[in-house]
Image (cartoon, rainbow over the protein chains, first blue to last red):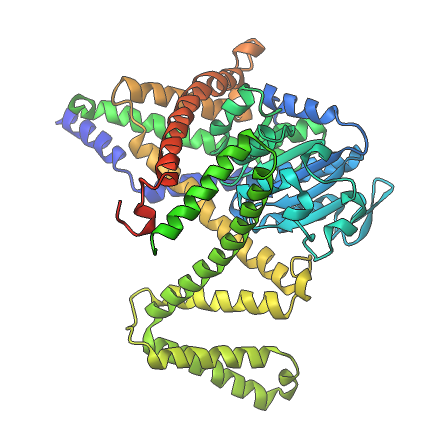
Length: 291
Length: 268
């Protein structure tokens, strides 16, 4: 009888109401937002490599940042966008912002706003220096055409993006005057949540036109990108929220990536706990013998 | 000719793109630029086609009575606004709304569709589409509609972004629930997958390093997670990528050579 009751307990545990799991995850994600626990962020080699490749750029170098994601992926990718923009401003790198996803240019504007503290407008002060739109940064906007836009940029960026996001002819922007194709871009930084994204940038801009590329990806996409990093086709990878936190750590910024790592730690811990409990119940209930 | 012309276009463009990758000189270089531009134009038109198709499907679900009801409600609201707030007429919004309401009633009059069960979602789709179109075209400084502070930007930041982020965030709950039920050590392969997931999930957050902080740096969970990602994962991904690439090459060749014709209407 006792044995039967124990077995029933494990069977019941295996069939636990999913709302209990939902509640546990909700608590695990939201509770850490109110806690103030400092965590040591370990910086992985792929993030160090990406940072080192950025460090090699000289003042005045042109960095093309492609925002290939939309708001659902922003919690992971937006902190990386904010950090890379701040890094570019700090090191006097000129930024060419664009998007292969329709929402990209607005995500770029939001990242700029986060760094500057207000809508950047035509010019703004940052760290005691005045930055001017068209000279220090441009936003080319979104252009439909997926990977064919990258292909077109290889022969002429002005042909792929005749006007910037506000309708100004690209040829009238001082920053773009000496930029005809990837030969005039020193570094491509791609923030990607899918297709078109990092894979297309590597295959076309990297392999075809020999651009130097660094990638920032969602945690779901990052494992698929590792072969390109291992083959040297990418200078480094920022993968998911952890990648954002590591990049913030190495650049010296405390942003949302670092702040949200505690929530991520708790969420991972609760999922692992559920998996362990599920497997204990699986073995204890005798279900294993059926497989 | 209905099938031959698309086949010729496909073959011509496919061959040009293959050749220009290996011989980036004239005339292939210019031809590839022209075809890339055309691809962008067609793709841009396809976005409109997709959006309008979504609206059409939604209108079908709302049904005849539904469309007339929504159109009448908007017209009535306009009449009330005109009587009680004469200044309301000064902008372009009333005219645009009136035209849309009229078109909705007109479409409803000639529609044969019936109201479907999920009509409310369809109404939301149509209303959202109309609102974002009006905000973007009429009230966001024309070409500067993406600028911070415009009505379009307001809708993007405070409606679209939170809603779409919420939809995506719900994945966390379903992933946890699915992991609990499906991640079982049923056999050797499943156990290996389970162990890899265990180490990577812990190693990718600071908690993993905290738990193994007594161990030397190279033996901590973060180093183990790095190793899993850089070696077993990269090797597996490479195998998958090579398989996919071979499949893509063979399918592309079949399409370029006109052997595969299912994309032209189902007949292969």
